[in-house]
Length: 104
Image (cartoon, rainbow, N blue to C red; front, side, top):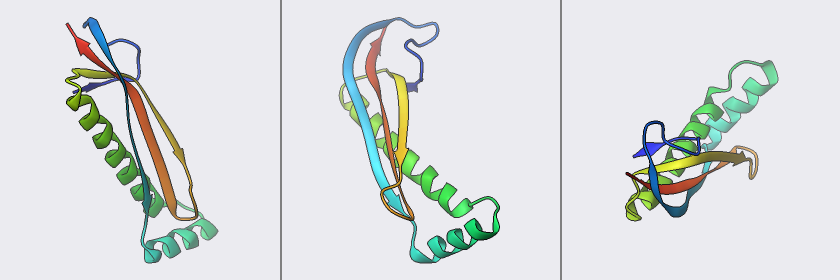
């Protein structure tokens, strides 16, 4: 499945728009990693505990979106966009969406 953040797929022609597809998830790390991340926030440095959580959330959301596009028979998803927010301390919501299309 081709996934791009542009309106077109380079070198290909879009023949049909199948609709908007999306995926989202809310992820939380366990309390131990949340405490370590909080301490790291006090002293500075890369917060790898939260980076891991965000990456996991993004992967889950992408898989959900791709599954929806595949169920529509799409060849690609164009105009892919991401949105993220914090629901509460130690959690991350990731939303990804785009337009599922058929290519020539």
